[in-house]
Image 1 (spheres, rainbow, N blue to C red):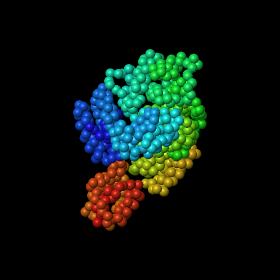
Image 2: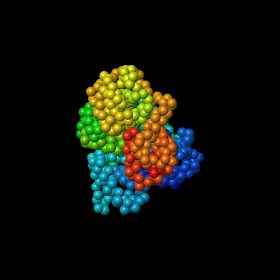
Image 3: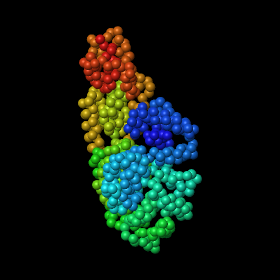
Image 4: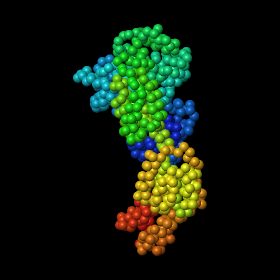
Length: 607
């Protein structure tokens, strides 16, 4: 039997659309790569038992290759295995305890919970503080009575929001897929049931069966207005809570004649038939709860003001000017209008990316959560899935800003138009975010190149006259030169409007021929070698001088192609710190920056 972590790895592999890396798995689960590799051996054996090969490749990762039908069978089996292993972690036990309390009409003892979950009573008692914390997030409270046990108390709307969150958060992708296809396609050939508490399972089965028949009979118009998963879960919760004697509001029966839409009247008729099977009338508040209509006592939300406030709040926290992105405003406004515009209870949408978003963008998730707490009405309990969808809007905006971020088009002028242009390009663009070095040339070509490539800034190794801003630097820009360039770029971004015609977008630096690239590396290598000889002439071991020349040429080539020296081959020499410091100074003057292993290797060429 696979362990909980191994089940999670199987789930990742079955759900992955790309290669899964051991490092990513280790980071997600908070364990070492060695532990993940041990787990993967057991996972590989499990797949072998099911006649599926788990492929792997060093420096690439793990992946599966099998047909879709077998993949679905494996997901079904995984779902059953997860059901058996569900409550081995505290987080899952806490959810199960809360569901049990919300579906019980009276107090529940710790002993009863321990017996049902199959853990010790002390384990349950240790979990109750976490149960209380999660309940408080939904503005409900955990009541403790000596010798009676525990019970969840609070407003009905909040209790239902918590229950909806718990039911949805326990679902995996396979379950959501099966739950929807059993309704939309009447796909019932497999024995499937979601991992719901046995106390609510009969109501779920009733609603699922009724929805499947209604979906086949009714036109698709109504389904364009309603969220299928929201209806399925909320109708199930409504029936169960009514059976427990808990209603949303007073007993006001819904008047079907007041509804003008034929599609909505049809759906109301369907709901009436479902409630009649449990001998309940269709109450107005229950209908509003199930379809997300305004609920009595809840305030309508000014979506335009809410959208502006959320964008401004997150922008300030993140230090990103999201207000400039009109698409973000439009998309977020549409999303919030759909979920909150009429003052309804926002649906707990299933979001398969929720855990990944929280893990990869914790700061942004936290800031959006703060904004929701600050600006959204306290009556509307906000779920993590709701927040994750909003985070996605901000991530799209951030990505668009990166793609369309304005950069100052720069020309580099050197004596011949050749030499170290690519090294200069890497140095400048790495140090300054808003610079795009699009070409380089000699002094005689400046005016022609500026016209051809819509140049906005010239970086030159010697003073030249031009109608464009010119920054004169050393042949290899130092930090002071970079600071001058940075200041001029900032001024241009503020004062100079974006040119509509950017001219021919050809990057001459990137389109260098192999011959020119080789020439750059040779010239740069020779320049660095000469500077090392000038600075440390008396300390070079003459027997190793040719070796030093070759090493420096290879070193420049590695730097050019973003490679680093092999750390394994370098041994630490702590006694030659002064020599290393002088070498470092020479390299930095040449615009080259290396890791310590490179220095450790070079010092061996000196006396």
